[in-house]
Image 1 (cartoon, rainbow, N blue to C red):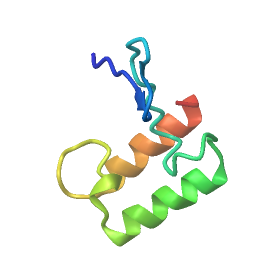
Image 2: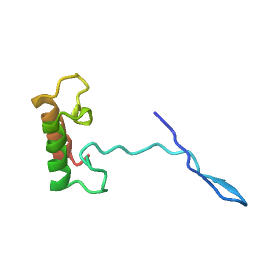
Image 3: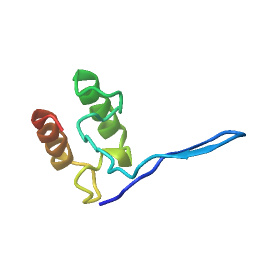
Image 4: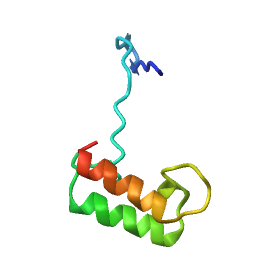
Length: 78
């Protein structure tokens, strides 16, 4: 599992956060912080346009299995 830190720097100081694991919510496809209809339609648009970001099963070709993987994540709320 990855651990990330955030470093904020200005002319006078550097501040680094504590390490934390990122939270990945597949169903929040548009990364707006909400799992809703816009996430679903943005995913379908990416799938129909052939975007590599729509390849959720990482098998290669975009197909119904990718759509099923997204729908399962959407229904599970993650």
